[in-house]
Image (cartoon, rainbow, N blue to C red):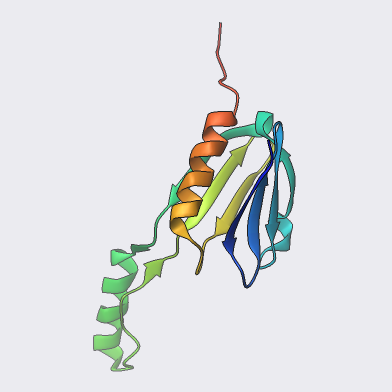
Length: 118
């Protein structure tokens, strides 16, 4: 089985799913690019874009006190976090297809081994 999922065209972000491993091509963060085994994966977490209310409120207060006019709504960008035995990867999903990212997250979590303790 080989399936290529393109999450974003520019800068390129795609994930190629193979039988025992997957490849990440991340032009915006080249350190994320590489081939990883499903056996290395502890968990794959998908985080949608969210408003960071603490920073937003703090910026409005600072803006009010200083009159700088920079206060506003701050958002935490959507990302995919791959937790592995030896490292964690955070893949930013700016302008990426979030539905495809959901599919990738499900497929990776399905293929990762279950760690049973006896």
